Image (cartoon, rainbow, N blue to C red; front, side):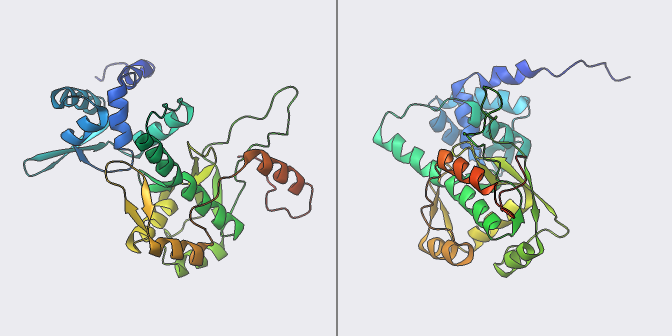
Length: 277
């Protein structure tokens, strides 16, 4: 007879995440790579023996898993749910202070473009999502809150998570023409909130297919040592030609965007109608 169990023990996971070294390891793995313990020790700034202990605890709790290749052992996140946990925590956690030019350069690169497990994130991920919506390849609100809208004395809440866009027939044809392997039968397209931009980027199967196409075309190149992605010359040309996305994508002024969204909502047939999701 199976033992009775009570409610979930969130504190058990919280205890693991309370250690900065373990958190740095999880962040290093958040792009879906499998890395050796020695690399993760460098990322966390701890001795190899200490890193082995941390990885043992993370693996025992199901946050990481071991991939054996011959006599070598690599570690990776235990699945997309763990990657999503890392991304969600990144949205609510305070930013670490930048103390050097190297850290500042790395932070800027991460904000521009990075790999989030199996999909594209950062300003580039948001820009591609915007481009698909503006071309009517997907339909749905971008979820951006209007800072001028008030409910009583309160501003509206943060960007809605897990909004669902709808893939249009035009979008299916356009993506297929761009060489993107759109999953058969797909209608709803998932998104999540980008932790640096606080706006939606695509997630789920369509986002995975887009990233795979960008990789196959040589548009993106991994940055040694961290999750940031570099856009190649072919990528700059391809993003502009196929998706109308400039590199680097401009930053979005949320206050101005909220004002534009409010004004557009007063016009008939506005593409921003539909409210927050």
